[in-house]
Image 1 (tube, rainbow, N blue to C red):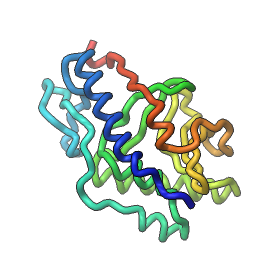
Image 2: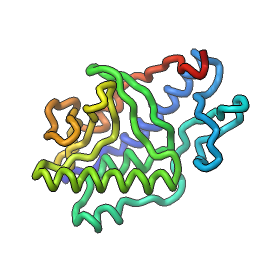
Image 3: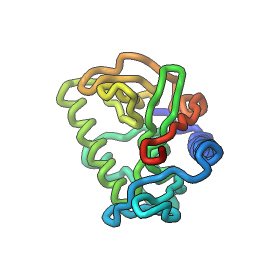
Image 4: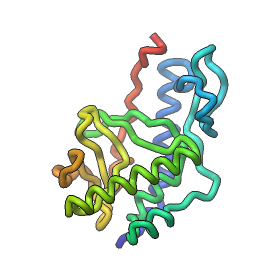
Length: 192
């Protein structure tokens, strides 16, 4: 199995900074998330108003690992998906690629990283039960039945419908895919 490109982490950090710069340029503040004292995150910044907090992606500096997933499933996860989810804590980041609009998924915090791992385990178990090749999701599209995933055997990025085999190759690698993205800045209803 190929290892991840050393550039993947750099490109994820760069894309997240471009997203923040373009967001601030367009809306004159950081992205917003509803205040929820039960869901803390290192991404949270200042209070925006009585209902919203500003946030920004935060580089992960604590040790997080996929060993528990790999041990539970007796499976080695592709290095690129481990690098992707170990680079930043963040709210979902909207983006566009040649195929359309999407939301890049990330863990919001260490607690959310545990939830993400549970979801990845559930996804892999479903793939095994259906006798399908193993994929690992990292983004959702405007069509709620289609997600973007990394094929675990070779690291290619594919579109796949929930419960189905991947049906459309999007990129040769996660690194190639991230470098092809553009931030998708839109005015959220809470900001109108």
